[in-house]
Length: 271
Length: 269
Image (cartoon, rainbow over all chains, first blue to last red; front, top):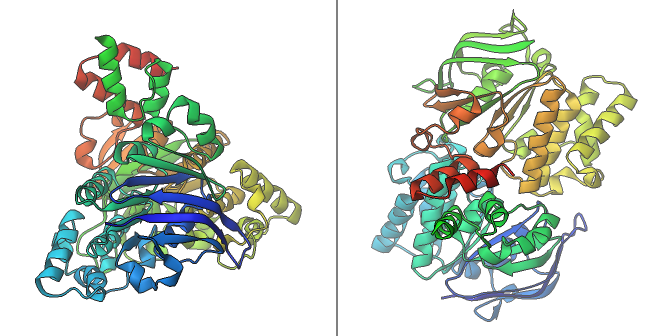
């Protein structure tokens, strides 16, 4: 299983001169479930793109299992870190759902039963098993997004990076994404997800990293990051704690980042 | 002042089944109508039909009648309709002009095309940028912003047009919580100023302040009414709609059999 490290990672976009990352230090161990949150433009997507080599550091470095990512090819990294884009239309190009999902694992040299199983599992996990013959652009935006997820899932990379996986998903779609995170994580693979959906973050991830202006300002469990003491920092990067956390604090129940933790605390308080 | 759909149905070009069927909708000036529903239930299609883009720009066949202040708009060309009804797309990349070099020019693009006087264009542009707290992005290239920043720029462009009716398709999809709140506040403020707003959202927390909420399923209206009732309806999960956070908490507390009164008090704090 794979370990990712960023050391003093700084990224300046040449075209705009924008400093998107400022000396980020980060270690994500094998099998962790990490959410990356922060205001629009705080550097989350830039950081994600460094993890699979789509961007190269202006300063500092990223290592994957101790190897400098800058010395690896995008193809080498693709076998270890799968990145699902925020906008599926930047990713989808094939003429059918099945060929779209096959593309990644084929490029990693998979074939025969191994390929079939990988594709089948990814389609089932994303609820697209009945759509394999369809043209991706006959699917609505939310299912195209699930297709983009399926095509990276099928690569079975040790690390999965999801950029805003729940955007545009309805309640069932969000549930599906949560199930995918659970099953990937149950296999010991690492999941890193960028999200603005704080309840989804609190309920799905063990570790929350909060970014502001290209730096990490908080890093802890949902209970820590959504505790009242951290709200000022959260709000400085345009985030708000989930309603359950606000209500739990008003009732003096401590940090209750999820509905379940709030209800549990209410029950205990009621004796 | 009302934008009204009377028994409207719509079928995309080449589609076997209609995407919308039997839609009745009244959007009065100064009110907000919220649209909820699972993916592919017809929300985006209804936005396209209500704004006139379907069938004018994208083809397909429409049935029923659409009226603006009592007048049939069937024969109106898009540019005439566009001065009255603004539409915000789900994906800001679709919305941005791609010709403006700066955010300021992008936001000013709409009112300039309406032949608004120069000084008024400048005033409207700054006021829209301020309302969404993106004045600091004024000199940036819109194509080099993050997805969420682009969504705010697209929204500012709509505000600057000052349309009588505004149709918004998931305007906060890519926004951080504070950006979402800015858009929610902008919707309330615009309605207060007399704009009629139709807003489709997965985030039902944004719809609790609407005057009416419609839930679509399979292109038809499955539920409609006051947000208090519709968003607490037991059928929401089977319709693929997430409950607002407060409704979810109340139900969780009730299911666990305790803490209901304390919770209620804390929710109203």
